[in-house]
Length: 208
Image (cartoon, rainbow, N blue to C red; front, side):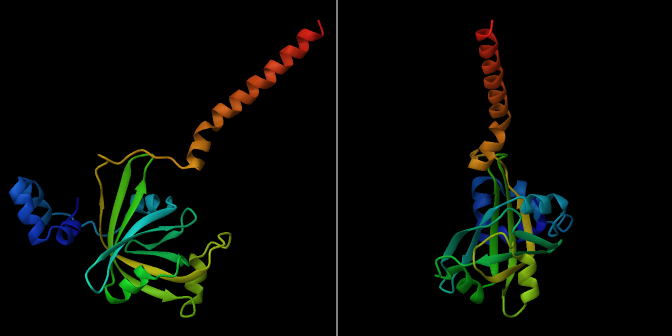
């Protein structure tokens, strides 16, 4: 855990509950001046993020209500611009524009990147800038995978304020159809080889 995370997440109300339930002393060290801020992405975070094909994002409306949305795309559609900046192409969905509307009033955002097979989770807090495709077409083009047919409406640029790797406890193991197919590919190949060998032996037996 890092000081940048603790400074954002450990509000007075949170600290009161930590004290009530006995964890305040354990977490106090992350709020000291000596604690590492860790608010810049390293190669480990960059590799993890660019291997994802989706994430969960939370925004807050102007009336104070939170909204959580899943954003998906081709693997690697979230780009690492630099150690403090992420960006992704925002594709057209159901056209309710809840997240976009929220971000025009409150630029804070929270992202959850999930790796279910390996039970890993990366949380990122940041501030956003929305860029329409008419405003910066070259940036939009650099973020768009031409093989992905969804209609691109804008880019979301995120300045990282903090991040934290979560404990794997309670994260269920889940696999996509592609991940399952990759896992069983060696068994499928072995089965095909055995079937071919069986057919060869049957044919050889008939000729004897």
